[in-house]
Amino acid sequence: MKERLYLFDTTLRDGAQTNGVDFTLADKVAIAQMLDAFGLDYIEGGYPGANPTDTQLFSEPRKLDARFTAFGMTRRPGRSLSNDPGIAALLEAEADAICFVAKAWDYHVRVALETTPEENLASIRDSVRAAKARGREVLVDCEHFFDGYKANGDYALACARAAYEEGARWVVLCDTNGGTLPHEVEAIVGEVAKKIPGDHIGIHAHNDTEQAVANSLAAVRAGARQIQGTINGLGERCGNANLVSIIPTLKLKPEFAEKFEIGISDAKLKNLAHLSHTLDEMLNRAPDRHAPYVGVSAFATKAGIHASAIVKEPATYEHVDPETVGNRRRLLVSDQSGRSNLLAELERIGTAVEKEDPRLVRLLDEVKEREALGYAYEAADASFELLARRTLGAVPDYFNVERFDVNVEQRYNAVGKRVTVSMAVVKVKVGNETLISAAEGDGPVHALDLALRKDLGKYQQYIEGLELSDYRVRILNAGTEAVTRVLIESQDETGERWTTVGVSSNIIDASFQALMDSIVYKLVRSGAPA
Ligand SMILES: [Zn+2]
Image (cartoon, rainbow, N blue to C red; front, side, top):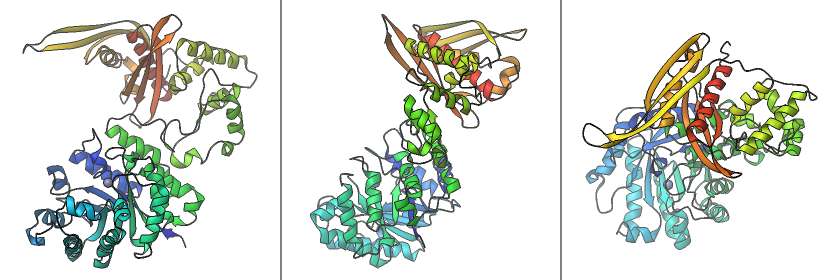
C-alpha cells in the first residue's frame, strides 16, 4: 500500500503576489478549472474580504473536484470572533476548506501582532473551532515556522499543536522567508512529526535560496504529507515551490514513486508541459526554455557524439522519458552537429533520408553557412524544418510577396498628443491572383505582420488561427558589420508553438524573413495544397 501525498496549489493566492501578475475574476475561474482537471487536491483561490475579485470569486460555489480553499487570517487579537469582519468573510465564503494563516514565531507575535503568546494561541484555537463548526475543512499555515522554531522551538510547536488539537486537518509549516536549507527542514519537520502525525503536516516553501523544491521533498522525507506550491513557481520575490518540478519528481523518481501516490494519473502527467505553458500564455509571459521537465531545452542535446548515443539508447542521456511529461527530445541542429543529429531530426519531421544521401551533406553545409551569418537554428525549430524540407525539395511555392512597403510616422493626433503610427502595404501573388493588403500596427513589424496575414487568398483559411506570441531581437557582430537577428515565436489554435528566425542588416527585413517562415511553416503543417 502506497501512502497518499496531497498537493495544494496556491497559484491563485500566493502566486498572485508575483510582481506583474494580476488575475482577473475570469482568469481565476479558468485557472481553477484547469488545475482541477489536472488532478490537484486543493486549490486555494484567494483571500475573500481582502479585495473585490476574491470576494466575488467566493460568492458562489465553484463545483470542483478539488477542495476549493479560502485563505485569511486567524481572529484578530483582543477581539471576539463575532466582532471580526475578516473571520466573518471567511466563514461566509463558498469554500470547501479554509486556510488560516497564523503567527508561529513569538518575536512576530510580540512585534507585529502586539499581543501575548497566549492570546495568539487562543486566536488559533478559536478560529479553527469556528471554521469547523461551519463544516469546513481547516488548514493552518504556521507563518515563519522554521525561523520561529530556531528562535523558540517550544512556542512554534505550541502553535502547531494548538491548531492540530483543535481539529485542523492540516498544520502547514511555512518557510515564509525562504531562507531555510533542506537539511534544516528535514530535521525540524522530523521533530514536529514526533508530536503531530505526519499525515497532518504540510510544507509551504519559498524559493529564496532556490531550494523550495528540495525543501518540499525534504519535508516529505521527514514525514509531511501535504505539499503547497504554485504552477511555474509563481510567487513573490523568488517565488514558491514549483509544482511543475515537484509533481514529475514524485511520479517518476523511484524513491518517491514507490512509496507515495498522488492524485495525478500518468495520463494527466502528459499534460504537464501544456499546463505550464498555458499559464504562461495567460500571463503573457514567454515560457522558460530551461525549465526542468517542461522547458524547450529540458531534453535538448547539441553535441554530435551525444546525439548518436541518444538515438541508439535515449536512457543514456535522459533522466526521464520526455514523453511522460508531455515534452519531447530535441536534437539541436547547429554548426556543431553531426550527421546523426540531422538524421534523427529529419526522421522526426517525417522526411527521413538515407544515410548516404548527398543532400544530407548539402543541408549540413547550408546550416553551417547560415549559422555563420547569424541564423540560430537550435532556437528556431520551424525555420530549420523549412530549410531541411527545401533542401530535400519538399516545400511548395504557396505565394510570393512581390513587394512591401512599411512606413513609420510620428505626428500630433486630434487632441494634440504626439503619436507614432506604422502602416504596411503588401503586394502578394497567390497563383494567378494578385492581392494587395494594408494594415496599421503599433510598430512597423506589427503592421507588416497584420498586412501579410490579412489576405492570402485560398490559403487564408489555413492561417486564421496563427498568431505571434513572442518577438526577440538581438544585434550581432558578424564580421565587420552589425546584423540583426529576429526570433519570432508563433502559435496556432491547437496550442502548438514554433519559432522562426530571420537575419539581416535591416531589422524589418530580418523580421520579414521570420514572419514568412512562420506562415509557410503553418501552411506545411496544415497540409495546405500547393
Ligand atoms: Zn507563502
